[in-house]
Length: 168
Ligand SMILES: [Fe+2]
Image (cartoon, rainbow, N blue to C red):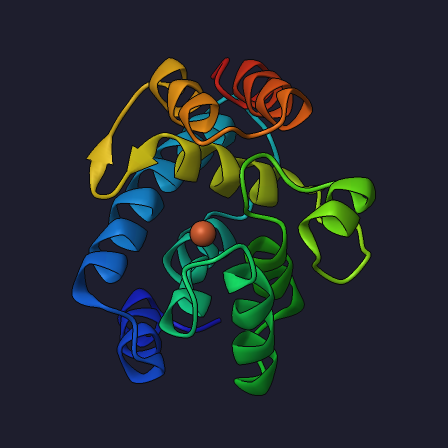
């Protein structure tokens, strides 16, 4: 597995802006904190995958800030030959994931983009707790989704993920 400094170098080399890189660092810090609590509670969770996946989750923002940044991130990560668990964290990190039906409406390739593993869910949730570089609570995240006119189903999924992951 690559190191955190390798991951930061990859973000820079991909062309991510400094604020995006700082965002990824904040998300990674929170994700590791959550993962460590899961580990402490006796759960099987890979802290390294969580840390590196969170650092790289927005690597696609080097190409676009739109919804497709997850897909762009997947292509970059695949070109770099990164571990498939990292690729899946990047693919499934938006909101609390995107369903096949939502993908159709959003005009992205018809596929299921829902986080499946504990590592994917932790990064998703940690990302929802960060606006820019600021840590916020889940209600603030949900208000922003409402302001942006996001669908109720997607919002409910973010709340459910917080209820599921945020308990530790
Ligand atoms: Fe993102």
